[in-house]
Structure formats: C-alpha cells, structure tokens
View 1 (cartoon, rainbow, N blue to C red):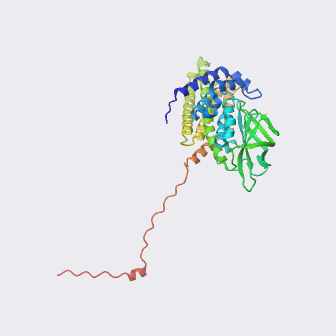
View 2: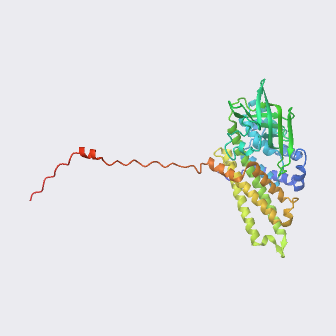
View 3: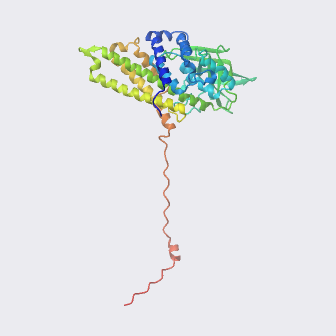
Amino acid sequence: MDAAFTAEQEEIRRTLRELVTKRCGQGEVKAAVRTPAGYDAALWSALAEQLGLPGIAIPETYGGVGCGPAELALSSEELGRALAPSPLFATAALVVPLLERLGTDEQRSELLPRIAAGGLTAALAVPGTGLATALGLVGDNLGDWSGGGRAGGVQAKLSDGVWRLYGQAEQVLDGHSAGLLVVAAHTGGFARSRTLLYLVREGAAGLVRTRQTSLDETRPQARVELRDVEAELLGDADDADVPGALAAAGDGAATVLAAEAVGAADRALERTVEYVKQREQFGRAIGSFQAVKHRLADVYVQVQAARSAAYYAAWAAGTGSEQAGGLALAQSLDALRTAASEAVQLHGGIGFTWEHEAHLYFKRASSDELLFGPVHRLRARAAERAELFTTVTAPEPAARPKAPTSEAQAKTPEPAAQPKAAV
C-alpha cells in the first residue's frame, strides 16, 4: 500500500476545503438543513459544476470524472469536517454502485450521466429500520428483511407485464428530495422468495414521501409510502445477485462513512484545542493543565488511528483485495464519539447548550451509529468475515497397534533354542 496521495488527490482536497470552509459555516449549515431539500442547492450545484463531485467515482464513459474510492473518501472527509449537508452519500455511495453493478446498459446510459452532472439525486429505500442489515454491515443480508412474504416491508407484484410496489420504507436517507428511488422489495411469495431492486421515478402515482424529524438534521431522513406504485426492475434478469450487490455497496458506503467521520472528528478536535488555548481559569489557559493535555492527546491518537483505517479501507476498495470498510467505520465512529464528547465537556457550560456547534458533531456520531451500527456489531461482522474465531479441528492421533490376543499368542511359533556355549 502506498500511503502518499497523488498531486491530483491533494488538489481535490485543497479545492474542496476552500469551497466548503467559505460556504459551510455554522450558520449556513443550520440554515441549509431547514430548507425543504435539506441541503444548500446552490452549493450542490457549485460542487457539481466546479469539481464534478457527484460523478467523481463514475466512469468517464458515463460523463463522470473516472476516479476511484480513494477520491470519493477524500471528498467525504472534507464534507464531514464541516458537516455539510448534501445528497452525495445517498447518491454516490449507495445508489451509483448498484446501478453500475445491476443496471442494464440502457439504465446506466440514462441515469449515470444525469447523476454525474448533478441534475439527478438518488436514494436507497430499504424497508423498516434495517439499512445496516440490508448492506451486510452487521450480519448476513440473506434474510427476509425486505418483507419475507408477510405483511410489512415492501412487496412487488408483476401485473400485465408491469411491476407494482406496495408497502413502506422508513429511514430513507434524502428520500424526501431524491429524484430517483432504488427500492428493495420482496417478490415471489413463498414459492420462490427473493429480494429485488426497483427504480421509482419522482412524481410516480401513489408515491408519498414525508420528511422525518431526525436526531441529526444534517443527514435528513424520510418515510416513503408506496401505494400501488409503478416501478421498473433494476437490471434485465430477476435472478441477479441482489444480496451480493448490496453487500459490495455496503462495504464501499462504510468506507465513505468512515472517512466522513474522521473529518468530523478531526475538526471537532481542532475546535476544542482552539478553545482551550483561549479559555482561562485561575489566571492561565485551561489547555495548559496536564489533565486537559492528556485527554486531548488520547483523542488525537484515536483520530489518527481511525484515519489510517479509513485510508486503508479506501485503498483496499480500489484494489478489490479485501473488505475493510466495516472495521474502519467502527474505528471512525468510536473516534468521532470520543472527540465530540470531549468537545462538549471541555467547552464547559457553553458546550452543554444545544445552540453550540459541538452538539452537531455529537448528534452526527450518535445518528450514524444508530443507522449503520452499533459499533460492536460492526466489529463482530468484520471478525466473522476474517474468520478470526473459526474453530480449527485438530487431526485425530494415529491409532496405536493393538496388543496380541491369547489366541494369537498360541499360534505364534516358539523361537528356536539357542545352542549352549561349550564348557
């Protein structure tokens, strides 16, 4: 692994940091999340036109930039520093990999260029609250999380050659504003039970979308109701490996989330260090106290370890060598929670008020763990994939020869008598 970034990657980081720092202050972020879309549409247009951010990981044949997971992770890290609300994660990290892997040539040619240009945003709608399960982050995704042929979830029915969807999906990230929904639905009944993915366009008859009140306002969620909604099957075969595609997309999404959490944790630490250098107590800055230094040093070490894990996961995703996104996400969420908690405490009385920006980072840490964790299950899943606790059966010892029986002894001839020595 080469840990050094290329000049192009460093330029992406520098340019994006300049733009986000200028356009995503605390006031701008709070104003953006209260808009109907849940993000700053003007900033999203600038990111698309100036940097090509929505299509950074889309091949050039479809109008994208043609970069890889490392560039997408670096971009998410910079957005995470400011907690900039945007549809980048829901669109580029969740939906684009599914379109590339399962979509037909016609579907990719129609949708990917529009996404790359920033004119189309997308969201993944998974029934219930099982987003982490559907993405294979906390366990096997071969279960009946999409409905299982029973009431609940989302059901798909083929009628007169047209697919129609019935059901409801909760916690759909950016689902209230996305122009395209990729819906996971159960079909086949009990005879051939399976989960397939369907495309639902904005404005479809019977589609009802409601923005929900969420813990983290910078990552808006919606409830999507499907009332006899016409849909299009993603791909041209109903025997596609949907669980495998979702698991692959989940590992890439975990890598992006890990980088995003690292950026947020790093910025929370920076702001806390700035504050303790200015805040005085007993005639000296509180940052000069040894106890405060030790606490911040521990946070720094944890953030750097999480950054190394996130960068390695991005490199591994680019080479296809192994799946390290889940473990990197666990490490990064731990680091973000620690950094945000220390920020709240070390800011003192002002840090405990909801109006202070430290709570934005604390809410992001808590919300991400609720959506994609918990951390201990992310680590358990990573250990299961790596077969760390697989029991190795020791080979049986070779059988010892049995002692001869009395009957065998009776048949054994006596040894010949040895001649006596001469006297």
